[in-house]
Amino acid sequence: MAKKVKDTDYLFISTYLHSRERDLLTAARMERMIEAPTAEEAAKVLTEIGYGEFNPSSERELSAVLASEQEKLFEDLYRFVPDKAVVDVFKVKYDYHNLKTLLKARAMGVDGGRLLLDAGRVSAQEMNRAVTEGDYNALPELLRAAAEEAGFNIRGAEIVDPEAFDGMDELEEQINNAKQLNPKLKLRGCLVTMFYNREVCRQGEEWLQNQRYPVFKTHIRRTEKADEVTFTNESLMEYSPRSGAARDYKAFVREYLEV
Image (cartoon, rainbow, N blue to C red; front, side):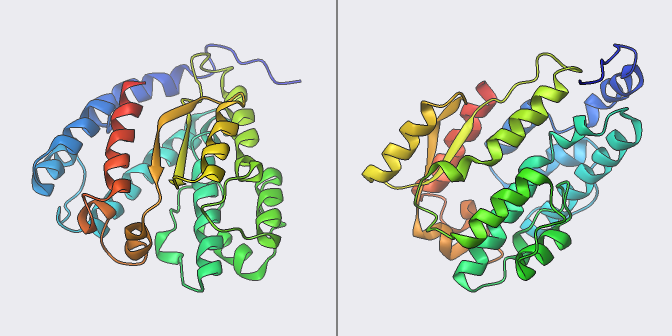
């Protein structure tokens, strides 16, 4: 039986977060960055809220400063919240991103380490070791099951099947646990990526829409440009801003911010 949460249990962390709101990257500030005409103008949004010095034309430096600020916030949350599982809700997605990246890189015979995001419950180093050695015992239960299944059945990324959504059950469980603290917390939606205009992809998207999870209207089209840019130092927006996937991601951000 889940432990009952008192409203006073999170009084300090609630007050702390409210005090930091003026320094956080909010949806409104994200919109300003998206609409900024240049990288320098977008960078001003971050410097206004106290982010460190970085070269706005360098994606690597931008990623580093964002990751650093995110890690500081997670450290504060873990330090102050009574139940760390509440924070884990926001870290699950990074576990599955890293797992997918490493499995895809292994299938392609390339090194995917540069693309890992060290913000999950499992460190990027530990995830890399698990996939390299095929030893998933140290991973959380549902993540381990998904990793073992994928390890034995590496499919082409364009193939849509129910196993691709195994992680949704874990995410839903984490969200339900955290609702004791914030009843308004919800899963905003699933984003379909690597979409081909093929019957199998349309069927997969329809299958997902018929499940209990909400699905965003926008889907991200599969493009060769994404493969070309995967292991370079450029973002897709820089490498091919007019590609279908780049335009789809812009549309998705706008849809997400309107939800």
